[in-house]
Length: 66
Image (cartoon, rainbow, N blue to C red; front, side, top):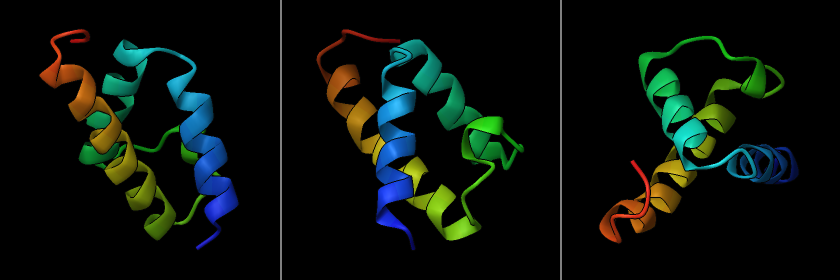
């Protein structure tokens, strides 16, 4: 896995805000093809999904993003 590509993807997505990240999480969970992750292989997409879910858990626990 290319950790640099994964980190760059996560950073770019997080800059869009929590509502957009939530949308991306749902799409990735459904297996939808997304431009945001088109350069990543399946394992890298799963790593992005896992990391985004971890990040968003912090916001959801604090009630700051839905």
